[in-house]
Every structure is written in structure tokens, then in C-alpha cells.
Image (tube, rainbow, N blue to C red; front, side, top):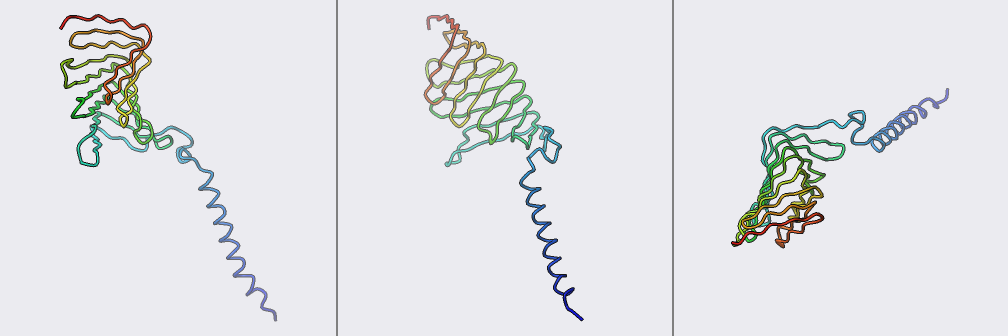
Length: 189
């Protein structure tokens, strides 16, 4: 009588476990984030009426984002917002208040694209007073405090009204750069 079946049994179990491990490794490495949803762009969570704030190391609020509705998508880590309202605070340069019909927030909140009836009000703490900007699209980079658009824009201030084909506004340096087809009307203060 031989004991060969006793030796083959543990080897068969090890072979089955090795095969399952290899299959599991293959399944994990080849699946994409959209794999579970059959490649469709489906929201993984939805939030109604929310407020998100970001603070600096001292605990002071840098910016606050409100929205009526948000849908987050796992496959590209984007978020679609309805009726967004972003308020960026700065004690020296004033605040920037942005509202629109909808917005798209890119991965990790690095950029917010405001779309549809965008209104930005920059409340400056100087004699120039507040500045109101109206356009259909505005790209905001909150960490850099930069806002820009390549669409027609109307800028209204205390003593000036300007139109342009696009602009870039840096809230840190307080520089407003207008691009192509610029028209301005100044009134005496």
C-alpha cells in the first residue's frame, strides 16, 4: 500500500489556493473605477443642501462652498453642483462671492467651473469699492485665488463699466487682466 494520495491532497489544496489568489489579483488589477457600474458615469453619492468650508492652519475660513444639490462620480472623482455659491475670504484683499446655475468640481476640489448666469462680486477694501463681474462661464482655482473665463464678460465697478471677450482675476495680487475686444467707460469719481 502506498501513501501517495496523502501527499497529493495538500498539494492539490495549495494549487487551488494559488489559482484563486492569481485570479483575485488579476480581477483587482484589471478593473477600472467604472467597472462596477459597467463603464457608466453613475453617481456614487448625492447630497442635498450642503456647506463645505476650507480653513488655513490658524483655523480661519479660506473659502466656503454652498450648493442646493451635488452628485459625486467615483470614476473621475468629479462633482456636479446645482445652484453653487462660493465665498472666498481674505482679510486684506476682501472677499469674492461667486454664484451660478451649476458647476463642476474637478478631482480633489482643485478647480471649480461655474456654468450659466455666473455672477462674481469682489468686495475690495479700498476706495475702488466692489467689483461685479457677469459671464456665462467662470473657472475658479480656489487655492491660487485665481478666476478666469474665455467667454464674453461684463465688469462693473464704482466708476467703470467694461466689456471683454475674456479675463483673468487674481484675488491675491488684485490684478484684473482683460483679453480681446475690450471696451471701457470711465466716469469721474
